[in-house]
Amino acid sequence: MKNSKTNRRVWIVWISLSCAVVLAASTALAFYFLYLPKKYSQFVERYAAECGLDSDLVYAVIRCESGFDEDAMSRSGAIGLMQLRPETANYISRLAGKEHAPDLYDAESNIRTGVLYLVYLRQRFSTLSEILAAYNAGEGRVNAWLCDPRYSDNGETLTDIPFQETRQYVKRVKKFYNYYKFFYF
Image (spheres, rainbow, N blue to C red):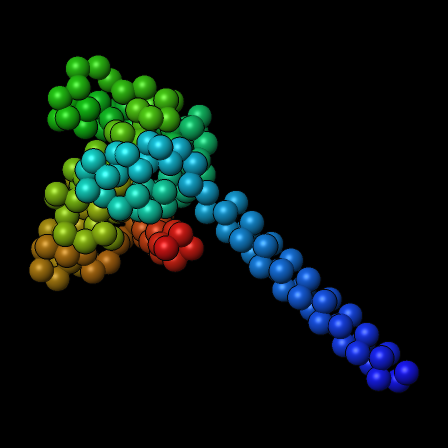
């Protein structure tokens, strides 16, 4: 009789612990899929692949720029998912041979243009930090920092980013990029 009660208690504890583990794991997964969404994947995957860009980087930029809000607009006038300024988007579109300015509130157009802009910056800068700094602060500023010995030892690689906002932006995008790579392996 005593042995049967003990066995029943062991089973109850085991079932309770198993349920707790399953609940914790499913909660963690739900948290990460909500925290690290892959919305607009049909556009991100397509244009990243066409341009030879890691889609996880595009997701990280979108996550940091707009939080996947296609109607987002910044104080500086940047628009849409990838927070592109109209003049930058128009320039990139012309380089890509497009006759019309992109509709930055349209998810597909915004992502296509943002991916093209990242590729454009990748052709001009040697590190991810420089690419992201240029995406945030502008290509001209990063070029100026590269010419300044306070921020670049060799004129080719940034050793410091003088703008705190840009420095934090670069760290944040890299953090989310690593999260996307880890959780979506």
